[in-house]
Image 1 (cartoon, rainbow, N blue to C red):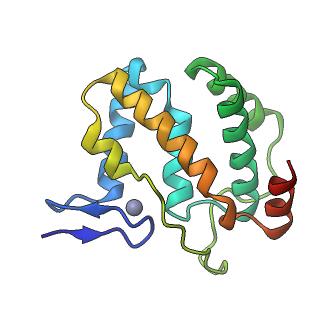
Image 2: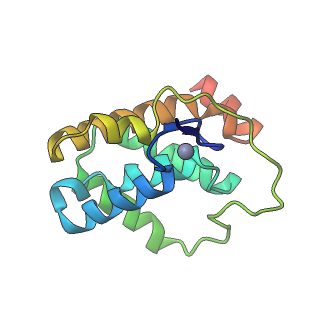
Length: 156
Ligand SMILES: [Zn+2]
C-alpha cells in the first residue's frame, strides 16, 4: 500500500509524504552542519519539484543551480552566493507561486526526495544524494521555465 505524490510523482509508503520527509531533512540540516552544507540544494529541488516557485523564481534558481553544478561549489560557497543574491536585491518579484498562476507542465523526474530518503545512511551519502538530486532536477526542469528562458538554455 502506498500513495503517489501529486506534484513530483514520488511513491510513498507508511503514510509518509514529500512534505514530511522535507521537514525531517530540514531539521537534520539545522542540527548538523555536515548535513546543512547542501541546504540550498534541498530547498531548491523540493520547491522546483512541488510547484513552489513563481516563474521569476524558477529562472533565478535555474541559474543558481547551473552555477553551483558548473563550478562544483562547496556548501559554504553556495551559501555565500545565495545569501549575496538575496540581500543585494530586495526582489521586486514573488518567490512563491501564486494559487491563480497557470499550472506548470508535469515533469517525470528521474529522482525525487523519496529516493534520497531511501538511499541515505549518513551525512556523506546524504550530501552526495542531494547533489545528484540537484543535478538531475536542474537538467530536467527545462519545461517549467518561461518560453524565452527555455530557448536561451538550449542555445547556451
Ligand atoms: Zn512530491
